Image 1 (tube, rainbow, N blue to C red):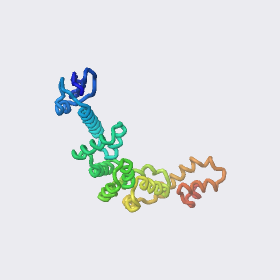
Image 2 (image 1 turned 45 degrees about the vertical axis):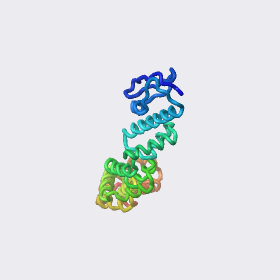
Image 3 (image 1 turned 60 degrees about the vertical axis):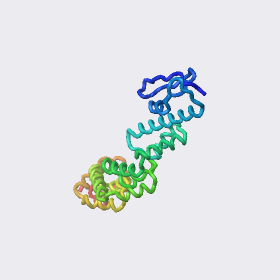
Image 4 (image 1 turned 120 degrees about the vertical axis):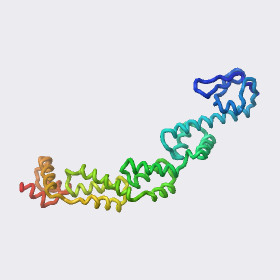
Length: 255
């Protein structure tokens, strides 16, 4: 048996240091202090001391978990990984996770809905990219597919079209063909399906402007012609940039 000989308040409000037989033994919260009726002169056996320390360890882990959640929502996997990284034991992690779930602080379904809405409203990411990000965060595959299937297709098309419009403006100095290629690649990399990509591009009603095409070609020729002594190689280079052979010939002839 060990006797409580001193209970000292910490600088942190609601925290106390417990001394047994004249020596510091462990810290406790005010709740634990009250629940176990800790006071000077109380005798504790080894089992009671172990139980109190375990209770405090769980409370500390829970406090860390709540703090981790205060910055943003987390998946169950993220929370478990975080607690293990803090070197809490499996029983402690299990107890904390169970407590968080009962309080509805941890819910991968709710997390997935929130994450998808945030992605749709603040980024240009499409379903494939959103799916990959949720996989990385540990959202179960069944939840991912279920929630992705609920995405409003009109919202996806709107986002894809807005992103496509921005890309068109960025690529305005390129040939029409190269601009279209870059546009499709950009939309694909953002995670949109072929159907959405086609619809978004159709909605922009893009057409080749021969005058702009010629101006862009002339600018490119002036920029790179010094690199090529052989006209055939210059023509080949310009064709790789999406310009048509007949347009290239006209520009090189100065027509």
